[in-house]
Image 1 (cartoon, rainbow, N blue to C red):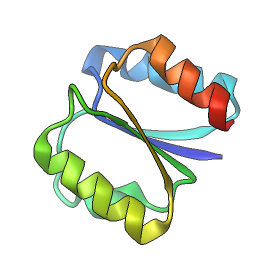
Image 2 (image 1 turned 30 degrees about the vertical axis):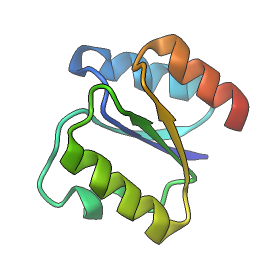
Image 3 (image 1 turned 60 degrees about the horizontal axis):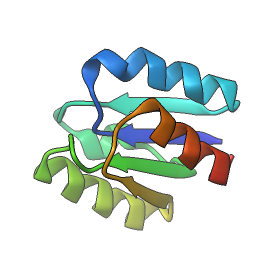
Length: 92
């Protein structure tokens, strides 16, 4: 299963990747808005959007790409490790 995480804290990026590896998921993490983010997202099975730490521009880009690729979009206000674990428990 491929997962894309939009938002979150930079210091937690390695923790997000470690958690996803435990659930046998390939993961891409975007904590900051990058140029051509819509091209870098790809076609994930699950897109996780941490709304409290993502900019409006990142949210709009993620919504457009999830509709385009028919990916499941899960939103979470909290960007904690336990929030990520709860989401992965439901989908992985």
